[in-house]
Image 1 (tube, rainbow, N blue to C red):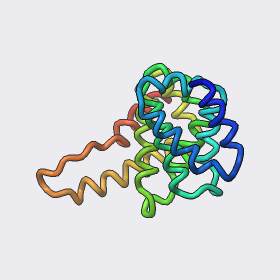
Image 2 (cartoon, one colour):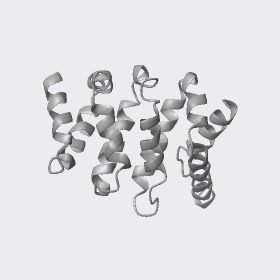
Image 3 (cartoon, rainbow, N blue to C red):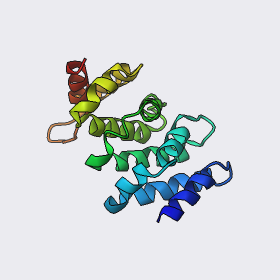
Image 4 (cartoon, rainbow, N blue to C red):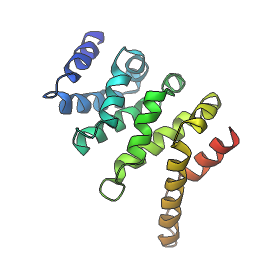
Length: 171
């Protein structure tokens, strides 16, 4: 398995293979037994964050990378190591992407941020990361508009407001 991850990291350096790399990483990150080893494997988190912040990749490639990150944040053991500057930059880039054209990438970023914030030791770092509170506040505003437009009986989980509150308390 380590050899596969090594090959994916090396292949991600090539522009030709990068679109399929993010897809493979997303699929592998779905499997709970892979998550901790993936997050700790040298180059995997850097590869995913690089794809997320680069405007040179198609939206689908960036979305696959963000979903892989979101899956990796499911693992409790990954949350502290994933709360790095480069990872927060990637989450912020996707949270701030054009929400009208591709809401899934922004929602995946908000889910990943919320999961990282479940570890209380991450909250001060997250709250002080440039632009992160603003992005979460904007997501809160979007969610409020959606909630106001919902019909009676419709149910949906909203994450931004509780995330914003927990980050503000951490300052």
